[in-house]
Length: 282
Image 1 (tube, rainbow, N blue to C red):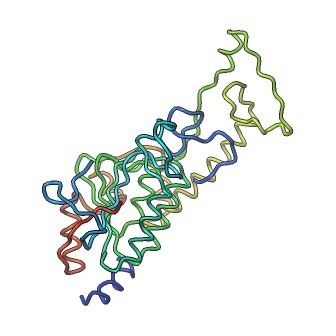
Image 2 (image 1 turned 60 degrees about the horizontal axis):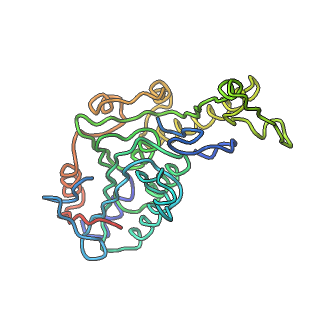
Image 3 (image 1 turned 90 degrees about the vertical axis):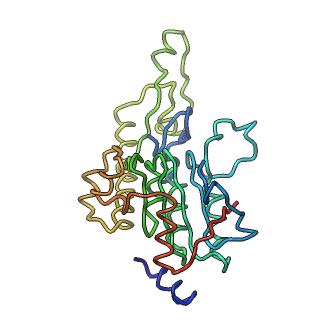
């Protein structure tokens, strides 16, 4: 249990940016760290601006850095959540004395490494108890976020983990040659267009990218080991991109309990001695 729980008991009386230029999400060049729920009984929940003492934050979909201006101009971001928005919400929650705890509900395939890192760090800085509830899945950057919680719940059929980093992309160079399309390289440095899908990836370029991926992977492993109080060798052993069904994840130390939102509320009752009134922060 973290010190912030002790503080609140007293208070209430009881990736990473890689050096390549084409790191994006979904159907773009690279895939990065990838591989609606009810808030209360009967799906009823108030907004935290109106009432409530437990804030529910939803991490649904791919995790990206920036809030969206318009889905009409950025339809590829329809099923995403931004760290910019979530971190801003967490700052408001921290300054809201009425909110005594946070529940983070996660259903995410992962996302941008830096975005997951930003949310994780914001949760770790919170002075309020944090519980994570994993719905269908918490993969990769989604699990990075979950690891920052004081306790993690997951349903029996939830998928957890997928610790790893990927930077795979489609190589169009052979197709272009067949179609008579020529790639003209105009760069001031020989590595400036590394990863461009319209050119072959050289062995030297691949070595450079793999070196960066391995460093990012190690940072990810270190975060999980620290956040979950696990031996780093144990994390390295399972950090192969695989995901685990909830009971296996619990046996490995990736989650704490099999449960759902009601389980998280019961935990808060036992830990804080308060009756949770869950509200949605948006």
